[in-house]
Image (tube, rainbow, N blue to C red; front, side, top):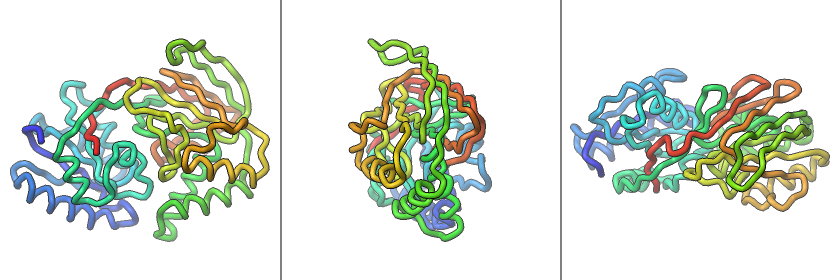
Length: 309
């Protein structure tokens, strides 16, 4: 472990309150491994609090660990982005949320003791971060059907106390068979991957995903070739027309990244893009709701130092 203090920022409300027990367990293990002087626990009290906590960390902190789901990882990363690049401690993740897509992208174990072993090994590397209309995202930004499923899953999770892929699939079936909508969009990609021409197109879609990492919705591999450190955003959109049953089959194939050869699925890579819709679609950023119908999106290469599992 690099010389310096570890700050653990935990969301006690994660997984409908089970995050508090995870925070106690993680704090106990970390304190035993690095000592009281090498560790501090910071608990969030409200939405956005993790951003302020991460932004205000002292120079003695070598690593900040986000404990919870993708929402708190997003907040911690956003707080780090408020600091000068040279003053950003390494970002680690202990998964204790419902989706944990970013933790999976980092290769983090689901067991808290094992995740702490990985963190203390301090195997670090650079990671890109996405930005949309001034807000940051670490893994995923999506519009339309998939965002509707993600937001409905979150509402069901709060209402029922359940979590996991099964809950996501229940929401997916409901959205596909009862709320499947088409959105007209305009895409402008002035800077694409080297060797490719700029893109200016208009079309219709069921969903549109903009990814830093490969997964969303609890490990659905929507852009299986996405990498955290390539300086590019991976785009995926699904075009009409698909019957609900066929759309469900494509979604299930995406669980393992097997949708890539489908003629209704399109992929691109871009450094930056402008995306607009004919009306405001459901939209989410790392699992949290956002609003609007026009979006300026870009990738900030190597903005974070992250701890890999």
